Length: 99
Image 1 (cartoon, rainbow, N blue to C red):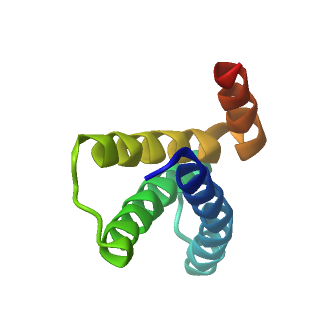
Image 2: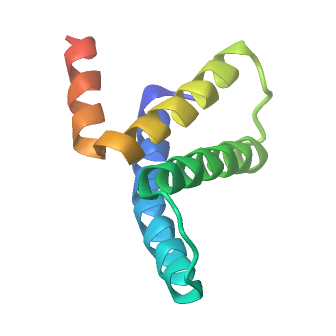
C-alpha cells in the first residue's frame, strides 16, 4: 500500500463517515433514541476504516504484512480523528509532517 492509496482510503472513509453518520442520526431521531454525536461518528469511522481496509486487502490480493498492518492501523486512527476534528485539520497535520 502506498501513501497515495492510503490518503485516498482516508478521503473515502471520511466522506462516507459523514454520510453514514447523518443517516444513522436521522434513523435514531425517528426512533427517539438518545445518542452522542461524537461517539457515533467515531464508531462509524472505525467501522468503515476496518471495512475499507479489508476490502482493499481482498480486492488487491495483497498479503497482510507488517507494512500493510501499520497502514491499516493508521487508517483507523486517522479516520477516527477525521470524524472528531475534521478531514481538513488532519490533512493539514499530515502535510506538516511531510515537510
